[in-house]
Length: 219
Ligand code: GAR
Image 1 (cartoon, rainbow, N blue to C red):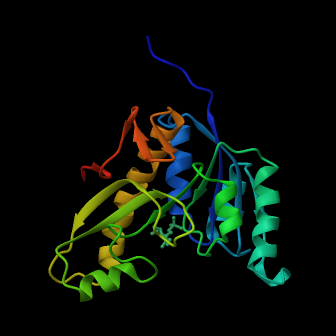
Image 2 (image 1 turned 90 degrees about the vertical axis):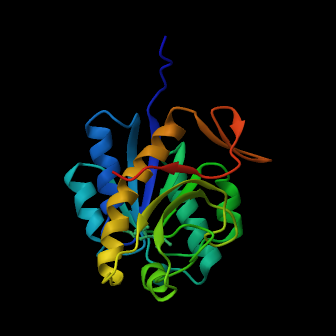
């Protein structure tokens, strides 16, 4: 017998384009992802992803850092806004802000991020350019639970792509991004199905400690 779950309530945080958000919404529409996006929140009013969400009648909210005296005040307001929707999972999808410890602790185990590198390699910004400059043969993306350490939380899953001769940061970013969309949808699906959790001693997958990130094959 197949176990059924209520759709997982997501709040998605973005800062820009929103292509990962779009992939999540498409997966929900096609019935692949048992989830619902309750709200999309951006720190930038001009984030293109906001328009995409409002076209679908999803609540969109903007919280501008210029309106807050410091990071703690901003994150406190952001937390209050997110909690209005009582999400089961907060999804960082290109949300380009560092989060304060109090915020991260509040969402322990229900806050995930996608990062365009094979963590722990290339934390931070400009990952594609740095991968090329390092001469690495493989690059990719990681989805991880968020902890206080920037891009340092336990990794749930990764997808790898080759770095090809002649790649520049843009061609490599595009190759990674296509795989990011599959990766993020897959991991959110696992969480929605109760297959992945964060416990005191690490990430669990199907009831067992995950000793290494799950690896998604590229298509
Ligand atoms: C994605 O490549 C995501 O991995 C990256 O921002 C891009 C957002 O694209 N996130 C980070 O670099 C976080 N450190 P999108 O707005 O089209 O989803």
